[in-house]
Image (tube, rainbow over all chains, first blue to last red; front, side, top):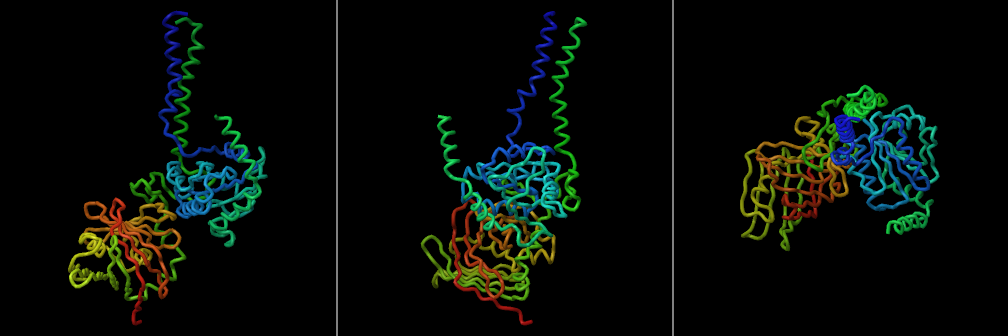
Length: 211
Length: 267
């Protein structure tokens, strides 16, 4: 191989690697995860936390009433329980009321918890899937659910039906309207099914491993 | 260049271009229109972001249809309807400034009239009032400066933001939402004649004004006012506690009311 050809290959290879090398430093750190329409990442995260109490919320990041729901749950659940490793939260932001991806970051600040992940789901299919699961006649968002420690999301199956849910939609039962105090009490009921020792043991083991 | 080196080199060049192609696709996707899975009735046209209310404040969260949500607050309806039949509200209490305390009377009446009397004895009586003839000031205020007292009076509104909005949708400019300690609020800017204006922080549950900031004509913050301990008196909601703070958060004074008298219109 000629010297000039070698140089050309090296330069081209370096050019090829440049975008990869530049990405981590240049890309701003996102406070949320971007989901594709298959929701595979959400499913994986959900199943990775079997054995814990999982909350799954479908919200619009520009919907004031959704934001109020997040704020209420921050006060009633997260600010009181702290980073309890037995509970994991998934907040799925969907593109209702003019929302774009840029709106997720400001809205995500309303729930601050070490075991909460915010997702931007641009297709809005999450609400449609939840609508099918719930068997209701309207698109489901502004929707707040709890899954017990045994719930699983089968690989080829639909989103599992929640063990408890509340909402802030017109046309769904009034007695199921989001009430942060009731919701927090329900979280406590589910947490009682998860022994503190098992997660504490796991945490201690992880701590020992990192030492 | 030898002929045989063609294919591998082509591969490398293609590899070099691949991330660029993928990035462009991602960018297109991110900036794309509405997803088809969201039904039309829960979408709004917001291609340029102009449909959302927000300001430049770091803590503000852009929201859609803010004024509609403020107006639709069902919690407020009875209280606001009752307030429409009220002619005067009088507050009697105490102003606390550091370790000192002064008897305080605040009288409010339609339309947007207010007077404040702080009685610190014969030599330190302070009175400020606003009527349709303007603002009159006598004496030296306690806790707040003259400019702050004047700004409070000039921006005073007898009615709630909901009633004001019912009368005129342009009276308030929506600025999004903001979290205050323990609560999420609607943020509204209300202009008043006289150079000062208020930025209101309206409780997203009760519709009460939890806080307002007074800004002068130059855009400088003059005063932060926190209202709390709301109670129902004769069918309307009134704050029994008001805290005044400098823009840097330093406390200036605290008003605590022991009684509030509501006088209804003759009709």
